[in-house]
Image (cartoon, rainbow, N blue to C red; front, side, top):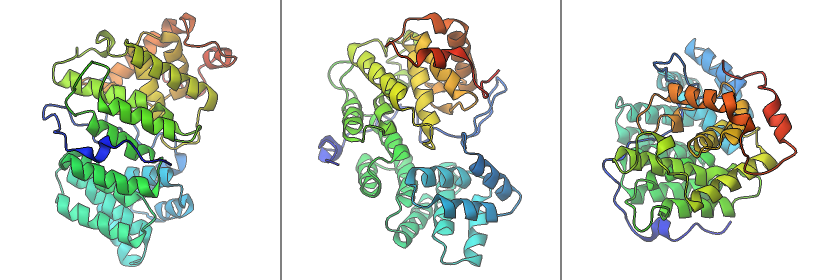
Length: 358
């Protein structure tokens, strides 16, 4: 794959200090509307292993990570979710005592310390050192670098973010979570030029163009628009109501939405461990752009698997925002004008499927 644009290493740009922080798009956080987000998404094996860990049994997690192998996006997703459990660090320490040479235990322990550091309950330098230890133990694995990028995205200056991302990308050029984290951070660069001119859009479109045709990075430009809206709204440069912001109404935004939705109609990579993150970003964008037919199709595919981001942007109750947008789209969106005619539309809009949220 050709290198990313020179802008990634060309200069140090200040991070907007007023921008809201969004280090991750996961988290099982209840809302005032009574809903909850499950960062395991549709991974039943991951949910079972997490439940076993909560009961102090690590064999299910051990087996899960062993059989995940070098499916790097799935490995990163599963370890990040397991590491978010309150006692994951203690469990991983016990596992390491039992199996001192276990790369899985070492990486889980490192990511658990990262999650604790991001919650202010662990020293960040200790978490970084644990990630470096894990990286040295398994040099080909991008997951320890994902842990370092989670820390850098929130705590470090931009050059360190870019350096860490380069290490991660060298090991897995299409790393899904890593690209989302980078876009979230670069969206905080101050804008120069026209409203639809920003380096994060250029980066996201370049990464999407360089990825294989079936790569979910095709949706990354849509993610970039959501992250940029988060920053603009948090700093008072855009309305707090995304549907009234006009952020998705410009020609570049319309082109990006059309391309991403057309890609989804053709490929729909439902085997990807984080594809629901992309579906939620697409549904959010279509809802904000006034495209209820497309949003309705996406909400039917999402079912119960809502993600906190981007529905929380800029400071909203994410569950309520998701439920309101979904109800509006499914209540009347199926008759709306679509971005393209497709033989799949009757199937997409005909029935809600087994997991539609009531």
